[in-house]
Image 1 (cartoon, one colour):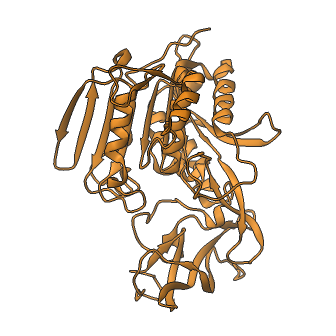
Image 2 (cartoon, rainbow, N blue to C red):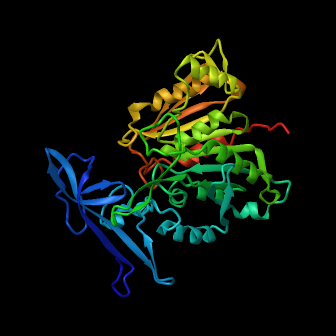
Length: 417
């Protein structure tokens, strides 16, 4: 704990983890002080490994606590490099300690950055139909704050990844900075928490925060899975209905990273009539039906229709433009696991008929045209990027979020009153 007087940063260390395997499959021989060369595991820095029945296991991890000297309270660690780990997220507040969203250092940093951008940030709460309170951050740019009713703003919903908090996502996906230059409103909602164990105290605590995708049972089980599509839909409609935000309801754009990308694409698939476009990174549409029964249910729900043109035999009722980004070096959701096939699926259900590929030294764009309602589908492959294909994180030369915005802002979807 940070019990040293005047300390603003210190280490927490826990040893012996026979239940947790590392993913590095290598012996850590990094610097014991800086952790240079050691393994990143779940946002912690692994400082020692051993073997148990020939399996590599974690023997020691570190995390960092920060003390807010003004309030005298401890804040949870916000990035592995602050626990001594170097790597791609050095300088970027990505993961909070034990996923205590709202208590991370990024939650402290975010309001100051918003102030510098002359925007407005609020933490709002809504109550879902089942009585659950759900939260979201909402950012209004300076231009939105002064815009009159004749200047309507697009709404971007940016969804965090698995075990990552919305306030951290706001600091690395770049939507905050794009919005600051436009008349725009951006929302970062919170997924729900699943029960787990605090690895430092051994006590029951909220462990992971994640979106619920029905097709992914390997993630943290929940006794009663949340209906995240309904939550997002109700949140969006509530924001669109507030006159003060001046939202253009025809310009709702879904975005997300990793599991949040899967949720963004799932929402666009399920709520086609209100989604003007999707721009997401490092994951796929996992909820497309793979059985005749599933297709029948999708047709009954008004999601799919039979198609003579589509390669899969079905099309969306209301076509959706899609821009996906994937790093060629992604070792969390490997590129070959489905980046291209995901694009082909979206192209098929949008009834796209023409494909084109553009290649540069840094990236490749696979584009599909001639789609229903003149929409387009594109896959941006960044050659030197990994799981975080954002400029300043793992994409040194390609501003993927700006490219995504330049793509989706062309499209709108008029709403029927």
